[in-house]
Length: 156
Image (cartoon, rainbow, N blue to C red; front, side, top):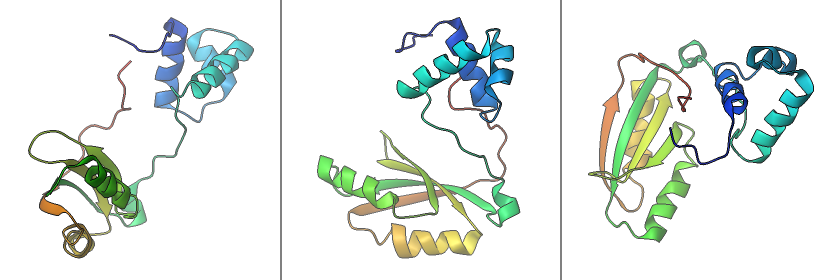
């Protein structure tokens, strides 16, 4: 595994544990990684300052909050100049239904991860917002059936 940052085995253990449970106390974390609490806290702060740990957030159960539909949209633009790509990327920040946006290569230019209350809510977004956006050429949607894996984004 090639790691860009200079991390030792303890740093990797810290990252693994925090990716599993970002709410644990520093004392619990230090016990799990095998060092005392003060140096553990210093290491976490250093990882945060270096931008390796970008932040912490709660993972919400979307269906329990009334958001029953997860879908992906592959979006192709008519023109792919740098300005057009940046403009579309910025536009996705205006859409609460879009939870993640990825610029991709291949047949599409962007992949959007969407979470909606229901199919009607998602369809309204696709028809009234997404396809109506300047420079959007194609939109292919994929409705999910069930999530079968949900791990942290980095396998350490």
